[in-house]
Length: 334
Ligand code: FAD
Image 1 (cartoon, rainbow, N blue to C red):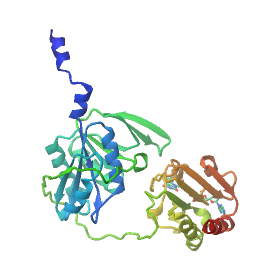
Image 2 (tube, rainbow, N blue to C red):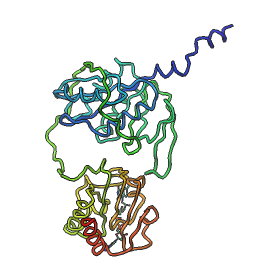
Image 3 (tube, rainbow, N blue to C red):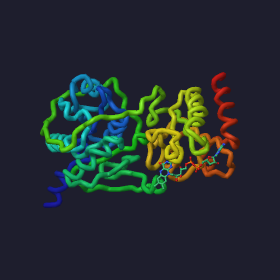
Image 4 (spheres, rainbow, N blue to C red):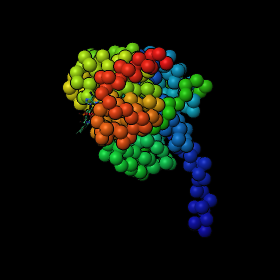
């Protein structure tokens, strides 16, 4: 009889899904939503329960209303306080934790961005959860897929934590559309935690070219470019002809040819554009970790044995100083 009773009260899969509720952490900068957070929303939706968005900063009303239009989000929790503008983890993590506890969320999802990597481990520690980092797929509400060893192995991990704290690889989840949603905007709780760190200033690399992390075309240069002058002379016209973002290998960054914000790879940015053009890059595994999911990979290298050709869909063996300007001219005429 006891087992009959238990059976009678066991929640159905549909009811279980109703018990799931995810909070997607929405990053904003100067009133603009970050694309990485929109990928986090997509992952949160795949969990199968309700999805709320969380946003904080000064004059948050306008961006919260913009966030309310994200498709599939039922509610936006907004906290208006300039103390959260720069996403300092010391006060942002306790802020998030208070709102997670208040909302009784089962999952908290953020992008694997500098902000997500900074804030979410603290949130996980405060909730006594084991963070699940940089996922590339959601199998079910407790099982996730994530690359390890710089993408050379794929782990499927299962979490039994009451609150699952997750960061999401942006290239693996399309950004949720902003447009037809009509979420309610609700004021969140603000614990006004003190931060022992203070925001002093920032020095951002400015560029009119597309953003490397989200561009649909990327042209990357490596050590084969030989100098900063040649990197700029060869790579920038190619990028302009293709309307592409510029990337670089670590060797090019370490040699001072390109800014380190342009580094692609294991210790740089992970990109998956429609087209990735590798110029004078050998194709070390640490570089491949950041670009091998690109849809079409084209490589230009004078060494026919360079490992980049093993992942390239299109390869051109030749001297980049000759071939790239020729290609750029042809693209300009096309
Ligand atoms: P090289 O390996 O020196 O290759 C230069 C290529 O240019 C060669 O293939 C050569 O044939 C070609 N070339 C030269 N001249 C010409 C020419 N005139 N025309 C055409 N081709 C030419 N690397 C990254 O890129 N990103 C990372 O995030 C990263 N993280 C790392 C993390 C760790 C822990 C470690 C240990 C390494 C990491 N690296 C990373 C470094 C990586 O191992 C390689 O050293 C680096 O990617 C090499 O860069 P490269 O291909 O530009 O240079």
